[in-house]
Length: 259
Image 1 (tube, rainbow, N blue to C red):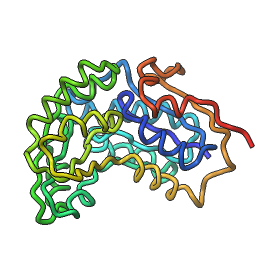
Image 2 (image 1 turned 45 degrees about the vertical axis):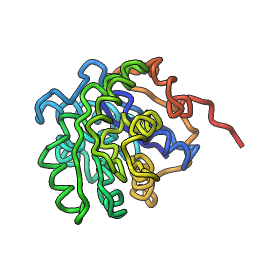
Image 3 (image 1 turned 90 degrees about the vertical axis):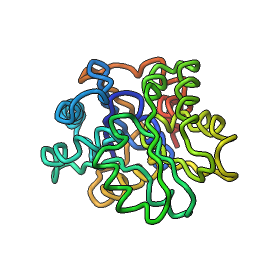
């Protein structure tokens, strides 16, 4: 069993780690784009083309499924990737967890990149799934870049900025960028004084991993060996050192125990 993941950078780590936890044997192909990142400031068509290039590089390794482990790429490129790769290769996108967050009934904040915040795609998801919940979109400039660098000072500054714009009494925060899941605890700490007791945070990694495994349950080949392949703008390389800053990065690079 082999699953590929696509993102501009380290945002694919949470979904990759979720897959590793669910299926320690899964072979992972991580395809990101250091030459083209960040994707957020690019045009919609440009984002889609960069995501497709990463996907095509990963597809050469013959995965059973491909996960677009990036909200921005899912917003702007999922349709193109599916048109190019399906039905031969199932493509799973990443959708902000607005529906379960809104189900609690309290005010919801969606933390996302400036490119995703206010986009027709995100607004449509809010209209379809938020029900009567009060939803605030919170743009987080610089946070994904800070996470990518593993720079604690930059992360703290970007998180503090977004926390200051998160409405008081917020009951749930949707992490609308996969990079943000790597610093969930830092976000929780920063908003603690402003949010409702029992704040719930919603990422997408676990749901995306489970969906990928469901999609290939009937078609995946033999069990994998836990092998990790990393493609950086199409080049076979190691993960950048910043990946080891996060538990998810350490998990997927650790040796897989053998029976």
